[in-house]
Length: 362
Image (cartoon, rainbow, N blue to C red):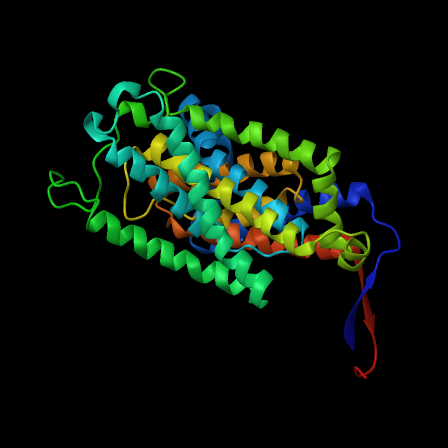
C-alpha cells in the first residue's frame, strides 16, 4: 500500500480560508495533550495562553508591540515566497537593521553630531539606516542566487549566525557602555533616538503603527500594481513570466530587497522602541516566527496582519504561563513549530486529495 497525492481539480476559496484555522485548532489540541502529559491542567493553560492576555490592557499593548515586528517581517517574506524564493534569514536581516540603525543612536548620544540641525533628524535617519541595513544584508543571498545559483535557503540561514555573533561582539566590545558595570550592553538611547510612547504609562510605541501601514501598502501592491503581478507570475509560472518579458533575476533582487528592508525596519523599531539600547540579542526569534505568520496568513497582507496578532498572543501567553503555571518558555517555541507543521499539512490537504493504492511503487 502506498499513499499518493492527487491535485484537486478546482481550488476552493472556502477551503483555502479554513485550512489555517483548522491548522491552528489542531496545533492547540496537540499543545493541550503535551501540557496534560506534563501534569498541568489543559483548561487552565488555555485560559492563561489565550484568554487572560485579551482581558488586560497591558497585555493587549504587549500583544501589539510583539505583533508589529512579526507583521513587518512576514509581509516582506510574502514578497519572496510568492516569487518562489525562500528567504529563511529574516532573523539576520532584522539584527543587521537593528544594529545599523542603533549605531546612529549611539554616535549621536549626548548631543554629539547634532550641530545646527538639532535632533529632529535622528529618529527618521535611524529608521532609514535600519531598513538599509536589512536590505543590504538580504542582498548577499539574493546576489549569490542570481549570479552563482547558490541556494538562498542555506546562504540566508547561515548569515543569521554571522549577524548574531557580530552584534554580540560589538556590544561586548566597541559599543559597550563604559559605565555599564561590565555588563554587555550599550548606553541607553537618548529620547531623540527612541520611538515615542503613544499612551502614558503604557508600552505601545509609535513603531507599532508601521505594521498596519505596511500591510495596507503591500495589499495594494499585490492586487493593483504590475510589480505585484510580476511577483505572482514569476513564482507560479516562471516560464510564462520569461515568455512575457519579465526578468526573473530583477524580481528576485527586488523581492529580497523589500523583504530585507522590512526586516531591518522591524529591527531598528525594536531597538529604538521596546528595548531602548543595543543588547547581545535583540530578537526572541521574530525572524523565524515570522515564517509561521507568513504561511498562517496565506501570504496575504491582511491574513498576515491577523496571523501576526495570533502568534503575538502565544508569545505573551507563554510568558504568563511561565509565571502562573511554571511551564518552560521553550514550550511556546515548540508550539510555534507544531503550528508551522500543521499549517503546511493543511496547505497540502487543501490542494491535494489523499489516495491509498495497493501494490508496490513502480
